[in-house]
Length: 130
Image 1 (tube, rainbow, N blue to C red):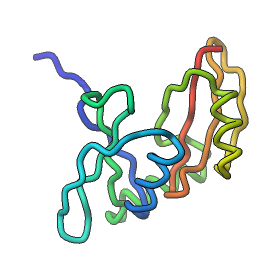
Image 2: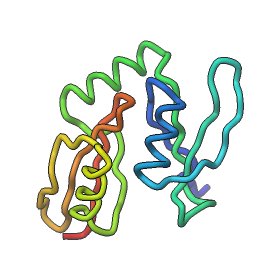
Image 3: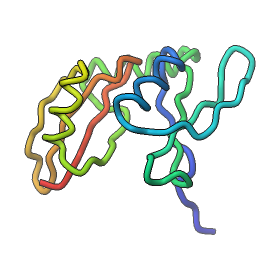
């Protein structure tokens, strides 16, 4: 057997708000939007990888998911990490759109990182080569 990544999740407090943030600010594109009663199987993918790994914008309705997400954010731990070509340029662009960063672009060995608040309960780390 040879496993590969297919779907990764971030727990969000509002799926519609998350979809808007991830598409309008981070440049993801919608992949799946399937109604499941009150919630949706709602995934996005990178614009340049429509058949790549999907990011599931999963409702945080489970108390364990809500507590996990809250604890990560309180401790400053990103729930996910996304690659960008240039962290400094991404920081400038997103700051111009009103996105809040909890960590500005910072050197971290062979990479530069920055951490943003996705407005849906998560910290997200952006990373690019140094």
